Length: 357
Picture (spheres, rainbow, N blue to C red):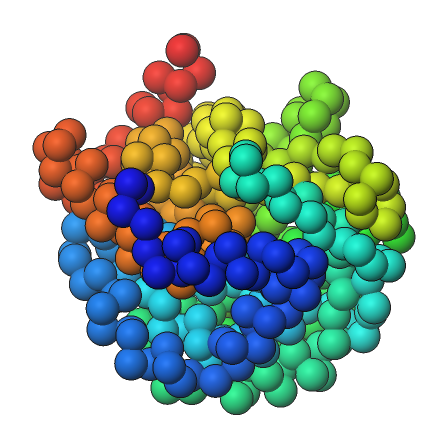
């Protein structure tokens, strides 16, 4: 990570002179077209079979994906599809248009390579989101996942049915930490089971679930109980972000959700927790603080099968997936790991070892 790219040396300093959300919107604007990203695609896609991974029923060329929250409305897919990610999760896509929280909603902590946001789920709504998905360009090998969120089970199922034929998989977002209208009703086991039963009746694509982070022991027990329920109902993967909330008067709500390097340790602990609860019955995705190949190997060795990133894109630029994948291959060579499949030979035994540790 000592060799700084053109983005890190020149563009990032310029973008960081702008307010966080302005720079974010500018970046997404440049990704609304496939040019010039299509020309870069061959260099940014690391075609190495050692990186292939399986997330339940979804096969990925590499484990590095874009987390929900970067491209909330699937408008930046034409460019993102050429940046070498294994998967891109768009959303959260909501049933209806929503403005989100007041601005300012995003601030950076450059010294920590981290950010804090209180966006609050702004969305153009389901119909416009589907229209954007229809406009995405020819396949590049990158899978597209739609994260959906809704206030009721019925609205989740309506969005699910409408969107699933336009994506490769669907991720059920149970709660946005910055949505003041959501008190976590979908984390209530009866509501969650109703949602899973409804999804099972209509699903034609792999289904993941993204749960809210936990802080207290009661929240931890709740989330791990939902992991058990998700495994029992045959979902394909689960992710619990390793984020936390932090107060800062620079954002409109005075508090927001963290992301970036500061969340790595919490993310790793969460992955270990969820892998132990899953016992090899459901895939586990990682979400929080991964910036390098060494970071990636650490969470993959802990039992995750794929990694969602967002803040690393802001700090490392459009080459981030290629750089992490190259660094990951170098780390695997040093550790004499033949491929990512070797890390998944005995997930149940690995989970038992994590519990014992």
